Length: 114
Image (cartoon, rainbow, N blue to C red; front, side, top):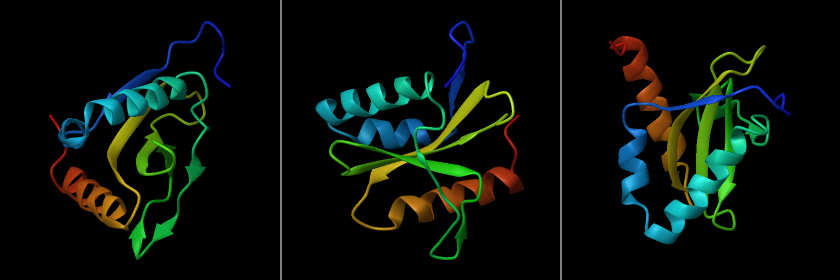
């Protein structure tokens, strides 16, 4: 759990807002609640590793909407947990969200944000 007085900053990577906008309004509300809860417990999600040959080591998944939606995130500073970066949000029914995150990670490394 995060310390009571400690403020945790949650960031969205470049494409995640597009993921969020694609969701219906009731789904967005549930996703927003889950993301807000990460500020209280950044380790609430399950740790990811290699998914379908996509290296997601250091990332976590958290479910929303009765496990129909995955929120994939990582802790930027896991030893202090000050920043949580949301990598993507997508339907759980396929590996598509993991593939999307893998592409975003690759693009982020090749073309760092300025």
